[in-house]
Length: 325
Ligand code: PAZ
Image (cartoon, rainbow, N blue to C red; front, side, top):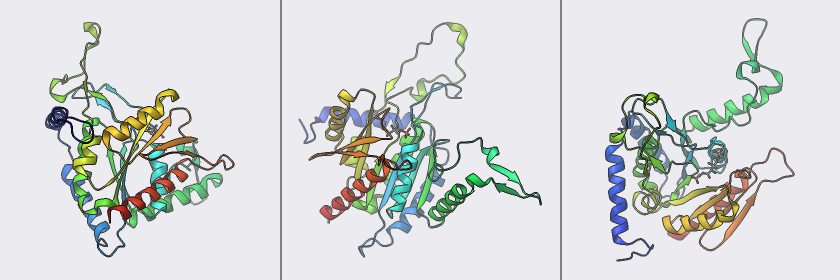
């Protein structure tokens, strides 16, 4: 029998089975209790105003690529391209728009407020003063002061919660924990899924324990498909939330078609379509009733495409909240 989103019952139950088997075989999160407590406190603080119409809107920004380990004691892994710039920049604009942000990011990728810091080797940005204190060299000092102060304000006001992941196993388990923790925020919650998530993985129980030896000829390894969790996130884990996913392609001829297919298949509210080489200049927001191209302001060298993008999505989220009310 076909359901309203086009997936039939057999497909839905096959997907649920794949998801269960993914989570069952995944190595358990080492810091699950700590993450759960942090999320609980964060959401409690944010939801204290629910009901009086002044609830803080919360967004979960995912950022960076997930890795697929090839060995349990991992020496080698497959990685997904993403510098984390999109997620970090977007987080800054969401905070500016008054959102609280759960920043689910790949360890070691670009962090909010660090984009303006100098590219020079880190230690070359400092010097000793006459009394052996350390000072930031003049051309960088304003940028460093601003980054430290903006970051500190966001963290101290409890507006920014950073949760780092590395592997696909950690990422999906953490996304599930987040969705399970934000239920009470209902339509005030947004998921902004900019992370580059692996499509294939080696199941933990069929993975070599030790470093794979190179002496035994070509490597023959079977990767299975990562279950598509977007539809489940949207329909079961967080059915009231506003969901935005991303579609990256290198062939512009298929980009919009693929983004539109994802919009319908996974029931997203919007899919941000971007092409690898131009992703910092322009994106297209694909929605059920319109496609909106969004460009960086080319007259301003310091402008980002994330600035108008987040403004547009904040407006769409506001309309989603009003509609749900
Ligand atoms: O992290 P970054 O700024 O280098 O790149 C951002 C991006 C291209 C990873 C992101 O915009 C995106 O499209 N993420 C989803 C990728 C995908 O289709 O799986």
